Image (cartoon, rainbow over all chains, first blue to last red; front, side):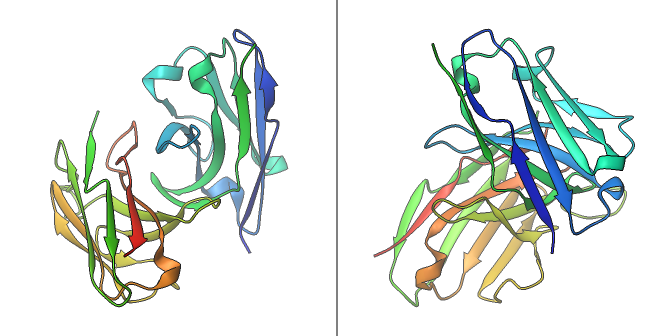
Length: 117
Length: 113
């Protein structure tokens, strides 16, 4: 069974930093693109970033470029999102999601990030 | 960036009746190289993460009931629930995976009338 388990969310002050993690199981992690997608409270889905199987290619939504960094450790079956210079508008549930190419086919349960003073 | 626009924002349908959701992309998501539409539909039930229903615009994910169907090409797509069941109450999102940044429609909330 495919499982994606996110952690690392919490309350952080504006301008602060946070690192999200996602541990994958039930599939060959290193064979898949991986994504972070977020959902602000009561709002729709917003794709944040993705990373190629070997980490050689990464893409970001414009609103997080220069502030967020996606990375992965295939030996640990883990995906990360380093977030810095956080803003109130970054408040959301952050989902880790598996990709088949760019198609998002499987989602974790999400971790809540709240940016507030 | 490809902008995805869904309509309606919400709809209420009687049990057993048909529900139709539309999705329009600002650019074609039909690939000339493989003649495939890079368009997917996902369902998000209350309090749950999204779940993939349909990809390549019309291919059902394994285990998805056949009352769900997708159609369309290039820039105009439709998700149809042929006979609405109580467990179909959810928000439905289209998303394009033709090119980065990946983009989602705003969602359509389906409720029981």
